[in-house]
Image (cartoon, rainbow, N blue to C red; front, side, top):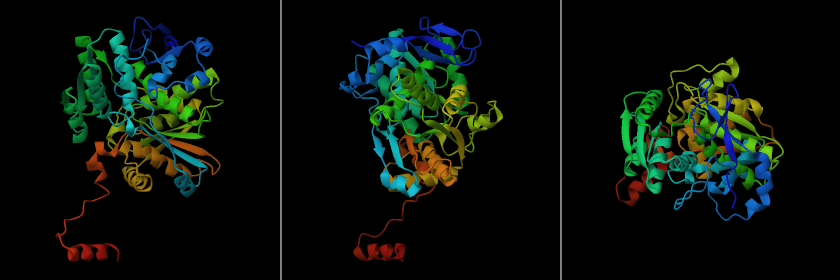
Length: 412
């Protein structure tokens, strides 16, 4: 049986090595975030692309040797990962690039990419003997934790801004989690979750500090590479808030490159809302500074990115770049994506697609290049945002003349 080859963590700032046991959230030396480390030589001896091709498990657990847990969970009744990578040849032609793929992570159990991180986080917590997991979230990570905790019989405690979309808060409650709406921002909820975990000793699933989470998120990169027969796209567009997803995307491609399974890294493009652009700002200034985040894309609305260093590393080491999108551009891209592909994405996910559009307009991607866009969450999580650009029509009378009158006016 193939086992994980996780051996410990390196500090993203000072490089200090920490063993896997005892588990630490941050570096003991400088308190910076940690990065999981693997024995790549050991993996090469017991695992191969040919071996992987014969694995019938389509979930993220097919990549166990590159995950920081000892084994697969016992209960895998809900599949996390194995989401479609859909070629959009017609849309690629419209945008003037060679090929385009949309990675549809709206198909995950709770409707977002965050399930990848949660699934690995819960298994890690179980292996350490925890029964209760706490998290701070703008909504998607919280809904993900609530969903998968219900599956794995864990207790979830959620801290989310009270301003989070009602659909996300409702989803959390439907799964039976303990929800504490916080009268403040995501950053306020994050700080509260840290205080609670310190006081209770519960496991912390908050994005941007637990190094296990980006390891779960990196499986999206592993899948993209495998689905493209190990030929990576030239550019990959990622929506960025805390920085954990883009850090995971880089880590996934990095791992595969270390194994020799891919011959290069794609350019990783960090796409942020103009009203929440601390990481894109830092790519120019060299220093991460907090902003007063305000954007329709709630999932990437963050004052101070907690995993910002990994995000910056992802862009710089892959020779990528950063983009800022206005709320208007994000909502327009959301509608354009839905009506051309049938894929209804929440604003944060649509931001990545908006970034692709801007890149083609600004000649940041060439006509002979290929691109992949992460669609990280379903638009059904935030109907109010979508209704800013599309309006439900007024009702008509239940007779043919009423229909004909409205139809003719709309097509005149």
